[in-house]
Image (cartoon, rainbow, N blue to C red; front, side):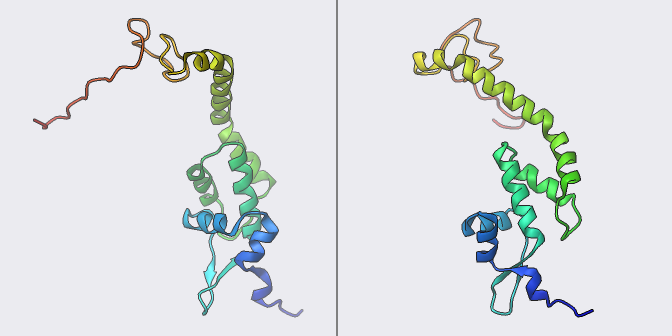
Length: 157
């Protein structure tokens, strides 16, 4: 059986951009953050393996639901090198992210429910502002913005 040349298994940054829908600058950013990787040709041009397409799709899907890039990078690092994330990988990772997403949904619900109060206040210094200062322990005794005294670390004059 004839071998397929390696170059057919690789994509230029422009090809990866066109196929994935991500801007070239975004791909460079993803690479700088360790989300995808490339090799350099003798002319110093980037070449991406085909699994980069699935990885970029994975990154973009995770970003759409609010997963931070550092968390995405850690998840991708668990996968074997040059293996595309598959449905089982996504299911496993999305399960680990579920509690984080549930907490974000709860925060967004709180924002929605109290947004009118904060817009009416204008300065986010309501006595019981659950948005600008959730779980405020001083809110029962004082209102408005206050600077808290700085804590001196041990050994500082």
